[in-house]
Amino acid sequence: MEMDYNLLRPLRALLEERNVTRAAERLHVSQPSMSGALARLRAHYDDPLLVRIGNRHELTPLAERLLDALPHALAEAEQIFRLQGRFNPVTSTRTFSIAGVDYTIARMAPILTRIVAREAPNVRFEFPAADGRLVNGAPDTLRTIDGAILPHGYFSGPSHLDFSPEPWVCLVDARASMSERSTADEILTRPWVQTLPAREGVTPAAHQLQFRGVDVRVVAATPHFFVVPSLLIDTDRVALVPLGYAHMAVAADPRLRFVEAPLDLDPVRDAFWWHAERERDEAHVWLRTVVSRVRDEVITYSNDGHRELGLR
Image 1 (cartoon, rainbow, N blue to C red):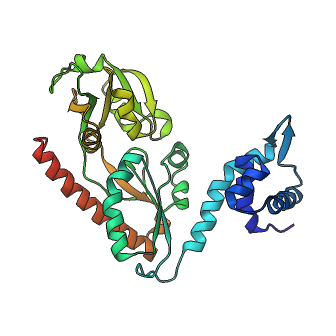
Image 2 (image 1 turned 135 degrees about the horizontal axis):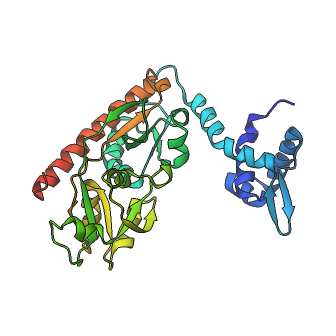
Image 3 (image 1 turned 30 degrees about the vertical axis):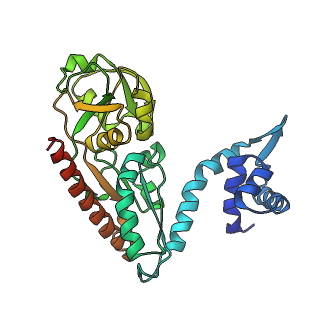
């Protein structure tokens, strides 16, 4: 039986929601329509896919495998439909997908939004999380998006555009009994908060400490940089973060401050990474030009701010 590719989105919704009504609501279709889609999918796969157990539905083994494969398959299909022979940013309605951690995207978004609103008003951007599946499946997973912004060390080989190196600092509660140039013992013996953007917790910060044989006591971890402040305020905890994020955090909440890192650490080196298949795509060439402009404006803004604070 030939596959109706229009069933891919209902298939994903059904397997993720495990409920016909919720899947229908998610795709804004009627429940009978979603029930019909489920019936066709069951016939195609000769498998029930969803099995009722008590008052809930569970996935069959085949459905579990399908659920793992669907995000990649759908992203590939969407990418095929996005391709255009000629790219005109003024008239294009293309959607670009750039993965990254929340802090990096938030830092770039205002400049990116201003450029795109002026030069490509109908272009759309999506910012999925840069998670372990993306990193561990690279470079193949880079085919499913237009690029990812992550530090060196997560990818090797793919084409990339380097960002400015950024020093590490320690973010702490503003009232913490810690001098601006604290000793290593004073900081390293405190409880730590760790960020987990990808690769099962082996973050650039953690790698820096491990490489120097430093073992800290991690008491809290989050994949979201903007959750870090809530884990530090009114505590004696420490988080090792890039300087740019520290500026954003302190500006947003004066209950925080940052101090110099107690060790001689290599700076974090972010880059925009993409798959080699995108190299000659006209739309992607335009995207890389825009990202390069955004990077240069972020660097200029950051350098000015850091000089004002006596950090560069």
